[in-house]
Each structure stands twice: as C-alpha cells, then as structure tokens.
Image 1: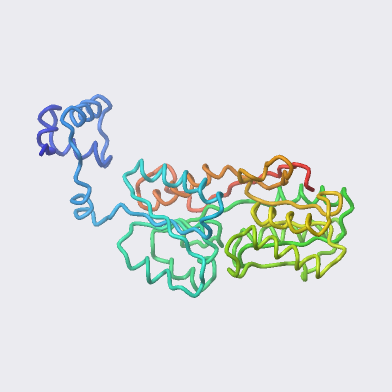
Image 2: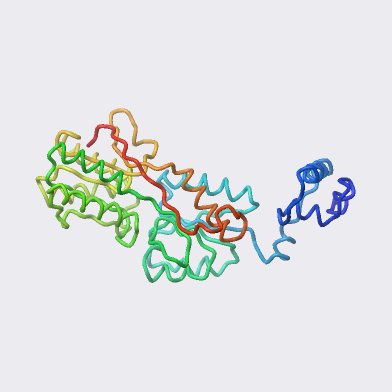
Length: 331
C-alpha cells in the first residue's frame, strides 16, 4: 500500500509537507503543492481518513436536520450544503425531524459528529434550542442567538410588495397559513410583517385567520388544502391568503378551485420558496424567492467557520439573505 513517505519521496519534499497539502493546515507554495498533488495522483495514494479522524478527534461527519422530505425546497438547500461540505472531506447525513415528541437530541447528539445544520422548525422551540448550546452548529431559519451562528432570510421587503398588490386589488380579508409553529423566525417575520404592512395600509388582520401546522398531515399540499377549507369556513369574505411555502399554496389553490373560486379574481394566493412546480402552466403561483442553493452554501460555510475549516467567514456568525417577490399573476 502506498503511504505518505512514498509520496514525499516522489515529490521531493518532507512527509510533513504532504500532510500539510492534504489537510490544508499550513501554507505551502503553489509549486510545491502541485508537485505533491502530482505525486499523489501518480501513485494512486488515498489518505486514511479514519486514522486522521482518530488523531484529530474529528469524525468528519455532519448531520443536517430537515422538516419535510417531500418539499423540494430542502433538496435545493441540501445541494448547496452537501456540495460545500464534501469539498472539505465531510460526510453528510440528512435526518428528517417532524415530531416534537421524539427526543432527536438524545438520538443524534450522542453520536460522534463534528457539527449540525438545522433546517427544521422543530428545534426552533426555546426548550429544544437550548440543547444546541455548546455544539458546533449552524442554526438556520430559527431565532438567532448570540451563542450559535445563524443564516436567516429577510422577507420583509418581499412581503411589503405582496401587500402592495393586495391593497391595489382592494383585498380586505387576508389569511395566513403557517406550516410550522410561531417559534420559527421564518413564520414570525412573514406573519408579523404581513400583519404590520396590512395594518399600515388600513387593512385589519384577523388573528382568527391564522392557521399553524401541527404535524397532522402527511404532506404540505394536503395541509394547505385542509387549511384553506378552514379559512373559507371561518370567513366567507376571505379574499387573500399568504402561504408559508409553495406546496401549501398549491393545496390551498386546489381547494379554492374546487369550491368554485377563481384565482386571482376571487382570492389572491401567494406562496414562498419558488420551488419548481410553482411555475406550472395553468397554475402559476406568485411566490417569495431566495437562491436556495446559495443559502445552503452559506449554511455550510458558516459551520466550517465554526470548525475552523474556512477562515473567510470566521468573524461572521450571523448572516441575512434577502428575498424577492415574484408576481406570476395569482395575487
């Protein structure tokens, strides 16, 4: 088996220089780096990551918590996360967490992992969040805390443009369908932003027209369908609905259409996330969008910074991404 010493001999450098190139631990000139990489390729040398992890006390394993495997929003996020982390030699495990009664902390934090990226609203609850403290974690889409890094989305500018469209159409009775709990900053910022902007335009927001998720439904489309049914029962004058994601909006539109409503003539509907089927022919959903792959890349880089793998972001523990409103004619 080819070892580090053989690589060093062929490249004409010390074995420690080979280690520095492989682990990117110290500066090595570009000429020397190229020689080492050429020798590695020429000899077919494969570093022993198991031995390396034992020496460094790192496993090179990261867990990513998500809420819904059916929502392609998470697929795009994970594309950015996995692509970035694998470049640094990490293995990524995707774990679906959706039931607050399950002790995911006990199940996964007891394992030897180097870090966790949380994309699930479950861990945004105050009591569960406290369990993250002291771990190398990039907290995403949840309340920002000084102790933990976070990448949050600023939805307010996009929400204000949505409200402008509602007001221009003369909407007076607007509902809100939230897939998670109000502990999520994503839910908070969009809900309270919508409420504040509506009231600023002289439109009262009825708290009875807020629907929160409760993990009762198998997927978000079904949840949106049933939530729209509830909203229309609670308020026959309902003429506008903001949905926390596009899958919920798709379900809400489906029920409204079955109930004889024409979108947007009778009811304005807006989703969020700009997933691929929100632009389907025949049912184009206005939405609030971000660059999801870039969002995932930022999450991964923030975690790497906490693990001292990427000095570029070492001083940035909290970041914001700005969303945009995409009008496809459903508002």
